[in-house]
Length: 399
Image: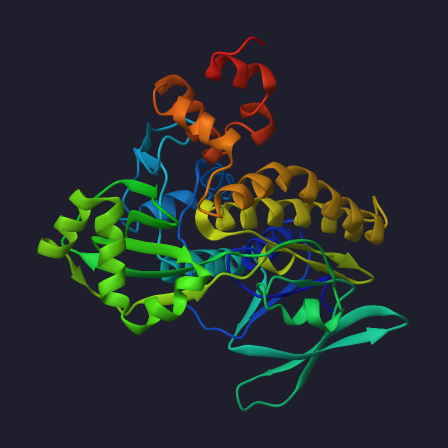
């Protein structure tokens, strides 16, 4: 009998397991993958996510892997260019974009070191229900016998196609249709800082990662997918040339693609019911937004911490578990609301007139640009950055 079972061991699952184990709880973490292994990802970690790693004692280990530090960012929308970087946030003065083969392994090892039991290559086949509550899991390693494990709380950290969410019929209650697809790969021979550049209904993302490679991603509207898929290489380089011609030239003359193209048609943006009798959801299983803003990993860390705190309250008896889980979902939704709305607004690749005016003003105001990057990094909330008095000063209108 465990105190908690976590299904999924990547950016949300291993931290939840680690944090509960550090508080003395008996935790089982399972994942059908084995580690190290890759997964589709933007890789990017803002300062607030890195601050979580630092608090957990894992940031130095990540930095020691040689992942390049990013200390300058360029964001653009057509002819508007916003460049700079945030001041130090929670003592963090750089950002990183680690390969998931590296990051996820550090997280899994962190859970083990904390005392959680981690079973890799383990697939959950069904949830156990008793008296209307989830009471455990049944599953197995490949080719192995079915095993049954029980706990008063089962946590689904198993991604947007969550088995746990499907098994408990968790419903989506805030959904915004996705509008784009992405293709990305890794190139040697080019070095750069962080770029997120939006052109005419298309986008290019560029940032350095492990092994002296640069991740280059292009995004377009979904209706262009059939044409793009017919010749990815040509369209990939054409989009880069249209938006960042100087980098596209370097990519064409010095860059070497080291891996295949990784395509993804974006899933919709959504919130999903994330708690019920004996179960909870965290990470993309419970809440997902467009990868354009690259907030997924940092969100997974932040809300893994929040869920672990609330589950501990329930296990310790300081708050009834059902109340603790309801508080988790409510707090997550409140904290994530502004970034969810901002992401949905800009991931159409066509700014509203209001956002266009803000971007135009930011392009000529380095101090406010620094605040913009602080919002992206987690040093300011969206409500703080877009406060009426702040926008009035930025746009030159009376407060």
